[in-house]
Image (cartoon, rainbow, N blue to C red; front, top):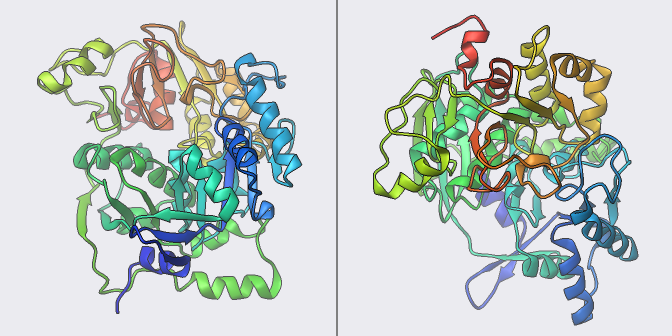
Length: 462
């Protein structure tokens, strides 16, 4: 019987099937974060349950931690209790904490693959919807709620309904100035917020295969925004090279055995998918959101559509009118960071664009690395000096403005260009108006003070 890659990973982790039809799927790793962990720990205590495999569970401090230089537990007072409860309860239960001031602190979805904690063909659970990010190395990540988190800690198993499967083949090639973020925004705009509902997704095709590993993380990060349960790109030699030498990678004979297994991780040539979609990316322009969800997307030079009565609220909130173009629209803030676009390759791309230039007057721009390791590497390469010389603030690692839960917020009515994954009403501050875009597009907005087609700054004006 021919199998998809998702079938192969799912079947390898299948423990059994419940009477209600849900499969019990073993989780190789579980990463907590401080926003939801304290409640789950309280539930464990109330029910007298223990953590089944504390050696396979890790706690990341990322959601509520301040990112300002010199931060500590109290810099963001609203997060202090969450931080301290997660730290204390994790240590009491033998769970490793990626703590403030430690080398490996950072956003869970960045840190897990960066350490080699999550590997190709693995399963991975996080109490956060963007667990699917690790699909970039060919793993299956699953978000879970707080009640479910308690169950996974106690059993190392998740009860899941086996989803349908979708293959999205990305055809053609990308033009200069167009990135994985543009591709995934375009995919979501094509398929809609519910286009992946009930499915897991495999990205395939020459565009996906040509992407760097870190670009694949960006691609997989946002499939949750079209309702998909999880998704991945089949691992290849680029992935194995990227993982080589990571802190938690197997070594010696164990690595050789792992590589032999990883090289089998591909869908069979005649495997069948419930949906098979092909999207030509050859003429794709840099993308940007106009509305208040990640499906309300246009090419940067296109006119804002007339969404009818159903979309009028989004237009009103964003202060836009049908038929206008976004290019030239003044911006107040730029945020480069989040689990979507905060890796070293993202920061290098931004630094190359802003070197020798200045942030426009009146624009507040910040760069927030996704992990302390990314921050160290960026500083070793001198990227922080480039950002600061250009007028960007250089922060510590964390979720920052992506969710506005840590003291980083935009003001009411401020227009923000962000590299994060969601632009819902009030997400980045009450009344804040967020446009999602790639790191290059965000950098272009910071430099010009307006929404700008980055290709104009690259010398390829359109």
